[in-house]
Structures are given as C-alpha cells and as structure tokens.
Length: 282
Image (tube, rainbow, N blue to C red; front, side, top):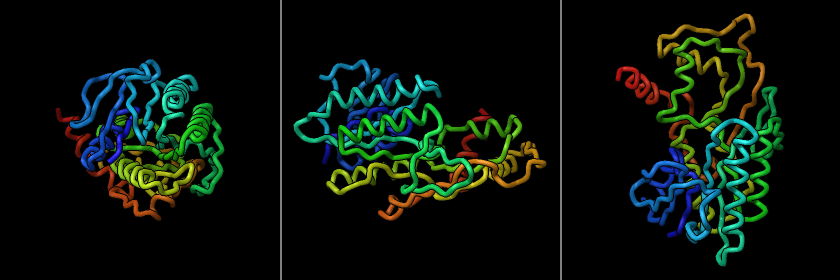
C-alpha cells in the first residue's frame, strides 16, 4: 500500500480519498478551508502555497486537484502553476521518486469547429486560462513521472448550475457541442491511473476523461427543460446544428478497463434531477 497526498481535497478529492482509504492506502488531504475530511484521511487545512515543507508528508503518489477562485489568468496561475511549483520544490529530489496525477481540463484543446478530439490531437489552447494549464502540465512533467488527466465538464452531486439556468428560462444562446463526465466516473478514472502508476506501468503524459457522448448543448437543455417543465429558450432561427465546440473521445482509459457508470448525460442527470427537485422543496 502507498502513501498518497491529495492536494485539493474538495468534492472530487474527498470522493477519491474515500476509495483510496478503502483500498488500504495511507492518505493525506489538503484543503484551503474547512476541517472536515473523509474518515481515515490525515487532514491539513491551509493554502498549499503557504504551508511549510515539514507539514507535507513523504509520499509516493500525489494528486493535484485544484479549483481556482476565479476564471482568470491570475486565478488559474495561483491555483495551478503556483501550487505546482510548491510541490516541485518539496518533492522533486525525494529519495524515492514521486509520481503525480494532475487533474487538468480538455479546455487545452482549443479546436472549436466541431472537430473530433482524442489523445492524439494537439493541444491548441486559445485562452489565457488554458495556457496556464498547459504550462502547469509541462512544469510537472519536467519534475516527475506525471500524467495529466484532462477532464471535460465535470457534473454530479450538488452541481446544479445548468439546471438553475434552465429553470430561470435564460436565453440558451448559440448551439454548440458539449462534452461531460460525471464526478464518480472521474474518480474511477483517477483510481485506475493510481493503480497503473503504483504498479510502475508506463502511462502517457496526458489522458482524456470524458463520457464518450459528445452532444449538442441544446439537446441537453431541451431534455432538462422537459424534465423541469421549463420553457424552451432556443432561437430556432439559428438552426439546430451546433455552430462551435468539439467532440471528445477518451481512448486510453477505455482500453484499459475504465467502465463508465454514467455513459451519457441522461444517465448522469437522472439522480441529479431528483436531488435538485428535493433542494427546491426544502
């Protein structure tokens, strides 16, 4: 069993921590605020950028799972690049080499004309935030054996933003391709990567984590609007075909046994709709 650090023990990190503890690993979790950690996890509360090195335990595997405070270049740099620099300084020259899984984003693929994207596609970041992610990936891969898990839009328990927009009957805007993945399937993907790396199997520099079901945003909103009895706010004069976005596939993990619990937005949003309706009734 391994000593594992989860730098960013929020919703996703805590779900991952529970499963790692259940498998017998020694897990330390760091979160910026809050003192609640899953049972069996050694918790540290504080900004990783400000923690002294002696508080960071000796480990063999690190998960970097950060959420920026704001969607700006400065917010991403603080959450990702600056945090990665701390981990590099602390662990780059460890006696026992440290391995790393960095939870990144498919936003690094700037393709925006409906292209199919997979792990062989070039990253073409077209935003300052995506460029920060690429810079962070490069920094970590220079220092460690590191795989960047590029996730598409993560949804799951408590993530009601899209449903709130549909219920508020906001204009849907132009149609586009959208790619999603349920939080629980992301956890399963990260567990698989941990298993491969701890067994010293070779992993690529990056993998994609998505549900294999690219879909138009209007289709998702139409399904949600019907389920929530909300008005359809699409401008049909623009046509039904998506005008932008990309269609993403996750080949590497699927070929190594990753099985999706929620292979489409319909499967994933069913339980989420129940939770959302219950939250409205409270």
